Image (cartoon, rainbow, N blue to C red; front, top):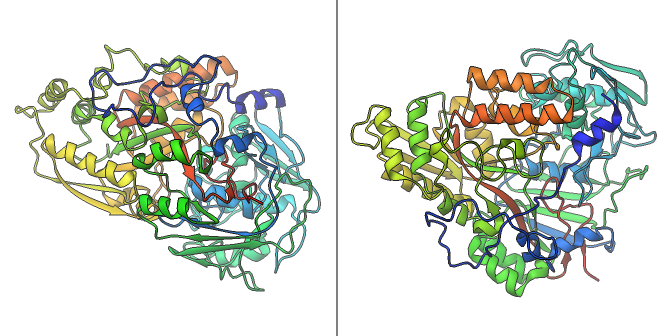
Length: 614
């Protein structure tokens, strides 16, 4: 595949064109039977209603993100911690946003762009016509922080990818996008070199693949897996189980670093509590796009009440929300009175209440369809701002990605074949029919087992989890709800198949890069259910869906590829793996003296471009 085709696959067609007409302050409670997928119309003048709604907000800073002022300190209020500080482990957008300030991977995303920018790489990857060879040239002179303090080489990127396949790192997406590398391990195990990763010189990395999946592998090089890691420094930490690189000791190549001692110990990272980020004294600005305005960031976890955290930010100075969103109850005031302190960008994905298809009662597809059919999806969407902040998600490919229109667009697949999805306000009669088909004569669930529901305690996810529990109880289920911090939810429960969680109501997925594979392969392919860092939350392992996914991965031409992923999408949706309720916008807030710049890829505040107002 040619380089130009790689660019085509990575460029979004449009930024959520034609969204919705209702505003956050609508009187709509979100539960009317006719208030499902909103009208996909545009305001006069061409912009979507949501874009019009946020005109004049901090979102406008994306038009000139480089207009900041050097200096100062900002405190970031977070509900929980990152999942991991190791670039090879993290698969969480909040952490990925932080990584972009600390490290230089091969490719990165500038604010306002969803096409990757060469970062450590000197230019776009060269992809062979058969898609089986990818070649990347690296910039010279990018330096590591102490104690390594040498220039980055291609061997460091090679090691970074290789270690991701080990049991001690267990990267969640390495087998998905890089599993076709010649000699790639089939299962996580001890470290071993991968034959398909070649470094003919210090500035060249070549990937040799067994299949023509080079475009996907090239796209995935914008993920943290391509952040270089010096083997001579990290390998002793990588021998520990799990690896302590990142959380314990690390080196950095970006303009910032976690405060560290001379040996690289991350003294500024206190797990579950705080991350102290300072300037990297060894940083070399080698063709870097990052202005790095702020001198110092102090990230404070433990702010589980999003409403309280939002009030602190709005009424304080030099404060920003981390992964927390302003609750829906505060959005109207922000839009009316404090618009310059609010920012919102398309989330580039979906929100879902996942149902574990691998264990009773959700191993019965009729039970899953009954739950989805009877569930009031508008009620949970309202907790994220209602239809002005996102359409009801009828399938797994969000607006703007290839395959969206082929999947029926906003309306989804054929109503007569997917009847359980047709009433976002819930259809009790149809739900009863499916419960009866599952063997429950009463039209409600009659089993005796207790469902474990694990959700994020912070708003809006906490209230969404509570609504989920209430609706499941009304359908006859016995439940136990456990609310925890977001990092704990992922690392101890929802991302760990053996944790025996039945329902994860606080999960969502954003694209890894602008290709539909990233929305379906990591999240619904039965081949992708690792013991840790699992993102196939429903643990879906359906032969028909798996076959459709594997076939779509081999399509290289844009048109057939979009249709193939729409077919895979349909096969997944047919299995009713969860309650998809929103293709949303991600909103954030900052203090009046902060000029916040939100990154459209990570959807977090961009630490490289945010600054204090003069």
